[in-house]
Image (cartoon, rainbow, N blue to C red; front, side, top):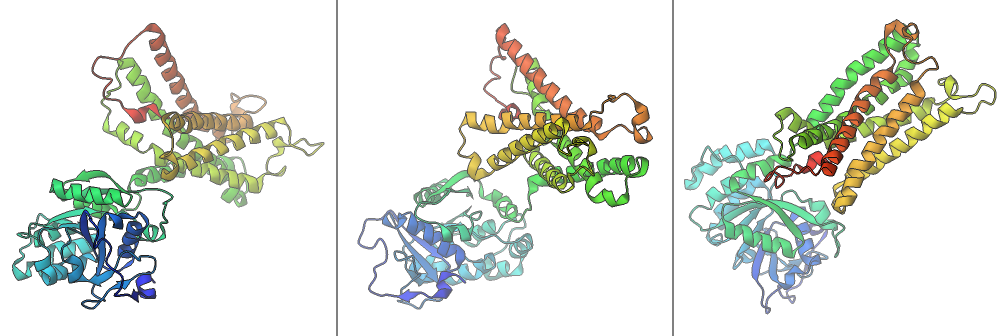
Length: 486
């Protein structure tokens, strides 16, 4: 239940904010739902009512009546018509399906305004609204090329000298409602509009209430802003599918080697055997996260230019490193939890001294490396949170996302090697169940390759620096920043 439904108070003696003062503009927030109240809350908390005359417009308020939501004492709720009168900027916080009825009812009051559409209709609603028959009534002939609610709204306002700006639709109403005087983190948004002046007006007002418009687009991009809110982790889809696809063969190999060939009981498949495949997956995932950056770094050094044209698959690989790295860290976490459950002399005899029943040097060193590596991955994962990473300086960013992850990979590799290296080495095939090499050997291949490529990158760049080699003229201006990380 929002604060309007909890109860509003009527007070005709309270003057609308800005009246009697010199204000920059009048702003109408149409709607009285959670978004409208949350938006007005950040206006209240930012003291923007000192610069702008702000009022909410609601169909629940009678003509001549003024009501106030608790906590929004400077922003009255007025009838829609009275809130629109004289307003130059309007935030339309009503469902997209109601846009047509709203324009029909208030078309005389919608001339020469900047209208911000904050709606987030589902793809089905967008299709229904943009191609629906109701928009062809009353002389509104819908264009088939229109693919967003914001564009349809702009078409409805044709001839009124009003301009639609799609913005604020990515900001959570809940977060705005809970915002205090000093928000814990700033608000960021994007905007789409065809009129530069309308866009500038929205940016000025947004800045006054603590919202930063990071990027702006033509109104034709509004469909992307609307669809994005209904996408489910789009940058995570390919890395997640890749990890699942990789886990299958790794688990099958572990199952064949240990359950079929080595004679492990099938009761040990859920934890003991799956744990080996999970560790393998985590290590390979981390290696594949770091490998493309080192590879591109070597290519840049060899060509003496940071402006390297990359194949499409390599560009996609680079762009997917963050979710791939976090998924790998998640697999390592699962491995740690599984290992904690089964860590005993029954499962891992070689970790324990048969006389003292305490861990021997191999067990303690392996656990030390594993704990340190997992801890560094946790630190890097926390640093990847937007609220944390945006506070990093450049050197701190490099340390958290380059030095720490590489150290974590090295510790993970050492953890596996200490556990898996037998006393008689790896070359005695007679000790391999079914002539299948150990997971220690296989899981170490990619991490060793990634570390080798990184060492090559460092060596080549260092040699170029000491040799006085320079980057090709004109190319250094275009810097592939993300290849310098990991």
